[in-house]
Length: 289
Image: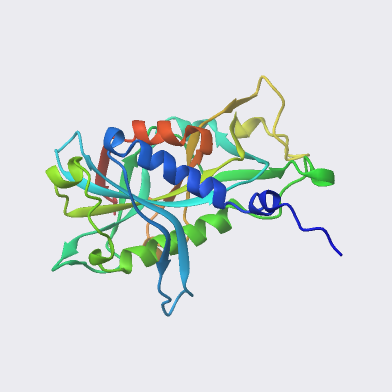
């Protein structure tokens, strides 16, 4: 007769322990940081475009713009990824000079429900970092595949998360109960909701900063130090055109148009509490035509 499998080992094959731990961290600091758990394993009904979806955690908090005083309801759409891996974000040095924010989905409540399901994507600066990258190399650390590239892509996970975010925005505002806390959720009711996709992971996060002109065309490889500098990061925006703004994606429409750049904030699990603590302000503006 086969011996029963260790239940702890089975549970640890999933991301559920991490998901529950992040929920516990949020609840432990809700009054202190003004972030409240709205839902876990949130069900998004199927649509013509997507099957049904589950969102690991939905967290909400009201944040004020330091520029015009507007209050925004920030909704964190959180996906948990428990991985023994390395995520290396490539940063061409010229890209670091002038961060411009990322495109996030916004909605405006109307008669108790979110207005148009796809309100214009706005250019937003949010969170403890403006650092962003459009390139991520994934490497695994497990067994005989250690040090080898991961065949999965962060782009694929981000598209799934953004699809969930859009589905969430389509749901009625009545789907979300008031968190009931004494924070600014009640003191400063916000009309505009900003949806922030977040991937929280145990993968090691680092940034590789280099000069693309120093890459030898014969090999196409990143040059060694000192031309290349590597540093660990607790969080970073992963941003590019994931295909959620088709009206802005035509490269032939205008060479001067700001290209779409939907953002997903990647946070290391050990930095999650600090991320909540430091994510206090927000800046929202319409995308430049």
